[in-house]
Length: 87
Figure 1 (cartoon, rainbow, N blue to C red):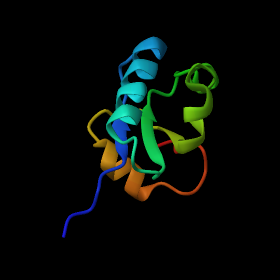
Figure 2: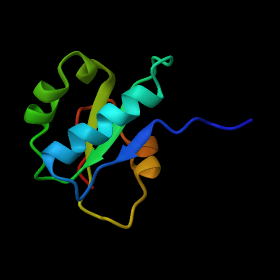
Figure 3: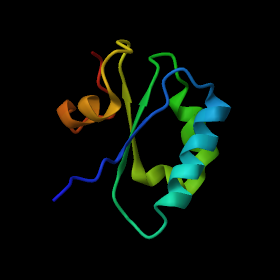
């Protein structure tokens, strides 16, 4: 029995590359309707990314973490229900 990892680490990516990466993820998980946790840099313009994703943005939750050594799935697992987590 394995747990599906619904987190994507986009730290270090520009806004445009983040959008492209998320579009790839949505294509890969088209049949699934689980929320997607997206770990981004603290200076990421999440509003711009949300606008660029349009309707797909409903299924994502942005999390921020400045510590690059913490894996994305750990950040997602320890986050609260808020939009952002600052570690």
